[in-house]
Length: 78
Image 1 (tube, rainbow, N blue to C red):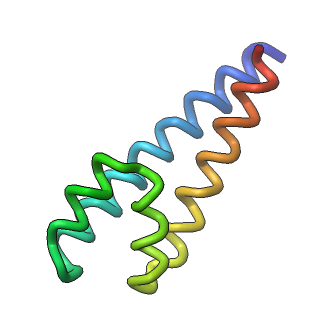
Image 2 (tube, rainbow, N blue to C red; image 1 turned 90 degrees about the horizontal axis):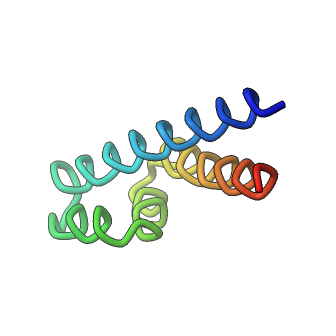
């Protein structure tokens, strides 16, 4: 059971980090105003909100799912 929790934590955190950086970079490079990419990088909850508003619902949903899986795995692990 511990191995499954560890795997869930690692995969969820890696997914969250990757998707978060991808959204921030995409906001910086493609969306206007460009400052939203930097702000989304520093204030994580803004990333899926702005991604959803830009029409990137798949990225926003993946971000939210990764956060939920990570939080549930952390609660179960304690």
